[in-house]
Length: 96
Image 1 (cartoon, rainbow, N blue to C red):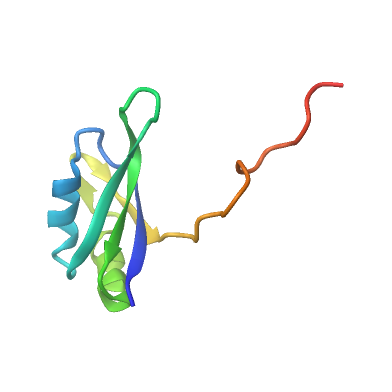
Image 2 (tube, one colour; image 1 turned 180 degrees about the vertical axis):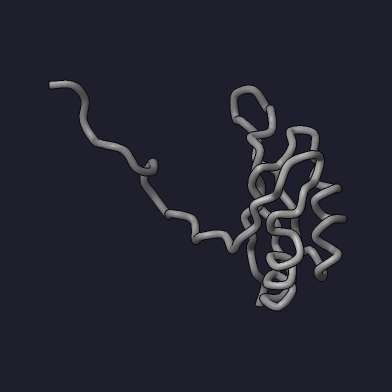
């Protein structure tokens, strides 16, 4: 069973290829995706890496969480399940 990881505090210069290479130190990388702003196309400083196995995911967390890459300490942990439906948090309604 695969494991999806959240990777935060990425340099805006980091590429998906670099992310794949870095995480392959811990095991087989199924996918790597850097999240970009939908309006500007600029990287948002975080991404997701999917490891082939849960063991590889745990190993990647222990190896890479806090490691400095491009001058920034990475934040690596298990990704939380995506919220299905809705537009996220916040208060509903407008001014009254």
